[in-house]
Structures are given as C-alpha cells and as structure tokens.
Image 1: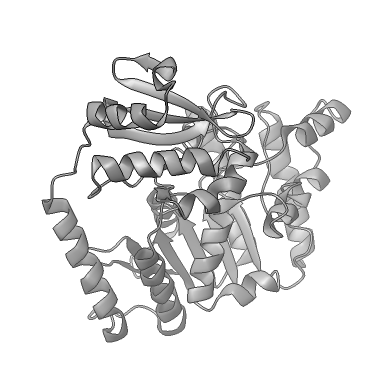
Image 2: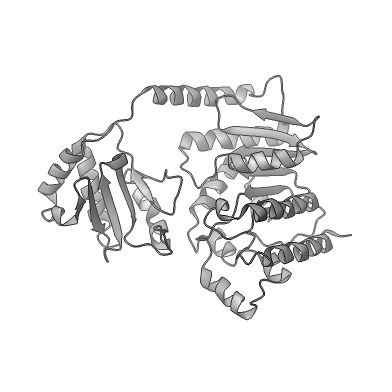
Amino acid sequence: MNIEKQITDWAVKTVKAYNETGMSYYTQSPLTEIKEDHINLLVLGINPGSWLVPFEEWIYRDKLRPEGLTYDDFLMGNPSYQKMREGKEKWSYWDKLYRLLEIAEMQSLVDSNDFVLTNIFFGSTKKESNISKKDYNNLKIYTFQLIDILKPKYIICLGQKVMDMVLINYLKKNDKSCQIPGLPIRYSLINNMKVFGFHHPAYYYSNEEKQLVGLFLKYYKEDGINEANPLPKMLQPYAEAYINRKIKSSNQPKKAYDYNRIIDLLRERIPNLDSYKESEKCHRIPIGKNKDMKLTISSVGNTIAIRSAVPINKSIYVTPKMEELLPLLETNEWVREYKNPTTWLVRLAYNRKTEQEICNIIVDTINLMADK
C-alpha cells in the first residue's frame, strides 16, 4: 500500500474519532504532499492551541459541515500554516524553531517540505489539559499511528511532556535513551528513529541556549548517541559555560525592585500617572496609538509586563498586533519569558538594573509605542 493511501485511511479513522468528541481540531502542516515512503523530519508538539488559527475560518467550515471536518479538510492542515511560514501572519515560535534548525543545518528539510509539523493531540483547546481524560487516552493513539506510517528519520519533541509520551509509547529494552546531565536536552534512538527533546520554542530562549540546542542537534543527527560519552568534546565548552552560568544564577537571589521608588520616579515623568492606579500595589498604564495595550507595574510578583488592554478571547491577552511588535520591544530590554504567552506578551528584564534605569526604560517604551 503506498503512503498516500495509508495516510488517507488513517485520516478517515482519525476524523471519525475526533468528530465524535465535538471539539474543534486540526493538524498543522498539510499531509497531502507526502509522496515518499517516509519523511526525514517530524516536529511534534503537545496540541495546537486555540489562538493560533483564525477561528472564523473554522467556523465557516463548521457551518458548511455541522457534523465536523471531513478527512479532506483535516489533511489540508492549519489554514493559516503557509501564511505563518511565510511571515505574513506572526508565529513567533516558528521563527525560533527555524533558527534552531539553521544552527543544526537541518533547515533544508523544512525548505524542501521533507518534514511534518503536528501534535500529540489535534484538539483545538487552549491547553491539552482541557481535553477530558477519556479523550486524552483515546485520541493520542492516532498520532502514534501517523508516526508509524511516516517512519521519520528524526523526531523533534517540543517539550518534556511530548518526549515522555513518545518514550512511553515506543521505548523498548534495547533502545538507547540519554538525558544530558545539567542540560535541557534529551536524546533517544528508537526503531532507528533519532528522537530529540528540548524546551518548546514558545518559551524564552537565550542566544546561548539556541546555540547549545542547535549544535546538539547538528552533532547527534550525524553521529548518534554514545552512552559512554554522551557529551562529545565539540559540545563540552558550550555545555560547561551554560551549566556554570545556571549554577551562578541559581545562587544569586533575584533582585526585587522597589515599587514605591519606581512610582515616585515615574510621577516626575508622567504627570497623570495616578489616574492609572488600580490598587496600592498596581498601576496599569495604557500605551499605543489607540491605547489598546497596557504596561503593568505591580509589586505582586515583581511584575513589569505588557499585554493587550482587553482579552481577544476569554483570557487571551496577546493579540496578533502585539506579536508584530515583539521584535521592537525585544530591542528595548523586554523579553518573552512567560510560560503562558496568552496572558503577558513580554516582561521587563529588570534584574541588575537600578530603579532609575527601570523608570527610563518604561518611559522610553511608552514613547516608542505612542504611534503603534
């Protein structure tokens, strides 16, 4: 049976199972272009989330077919996938992932479409934990069936949970698996598939971490695992520098800024500052041309961060417009380091800065965003 027929048969079963749950769902990259009997690269996340796809496109489909998607719909993948790939719609995690693949010299697999991007679960929920336990147990088998059909040479697992699920499903007694001590990297060899695991690129990655993960991928995709020496000489300087920095950082107490001092300094620069006072411990300053973003300064959790003024969908405060502004903010001391990127877009990297320096950055950012 050729691979196109196998994928179609698989999609028919998968769509039937997901339609019975009543949830919206989709895969990411199209599965209609696969012609060879295997692919070289599979990138695997946990679930696609509910904010990456313009929902009007799915609502339109659902109105046409109230019984749910057909297998043809499903195989087409995310309707915004190609636009996001081309940068026409912002997809920050894709940009970071592609950079890691460039360092690993694996970007050609993506450019030639010799890869598939998908998830353990296809359910379009904000978090995979929103899927019921019954569906959770019943639905994940369909992704593993797809892996068996695609027979990828490399699998990249975005996040520890994805790596755990792949290992639980596949790892056998004679397979090799390795956790590199002190590093956010895992590697396994399963059924001749090289499986890598590292932090999801939706999280903040320092340049140091990008380099380390990228070089790790580059080495292991070529040479494979050596249980006696899991960390080759070429990676040791990068690994040692990373581990030493993490140890040093963990031994230093986090600097908490003086909230009252910052507010006093800002009052000198922003005359109407107290009109934005939400409580004794929090100010929310509207920024942007249309005041559609808010810069929050709070003594609770030492938070200095930016998000949309109003949610776009229940508790989702990161809008497409804000995603577009991310590169501009990142050049002005703001970093994307939140585990839940739907609430805060960026936070201020205030550690080792004086209150006066923090005040200057806040004022500069307000001016920078004035016409955005």
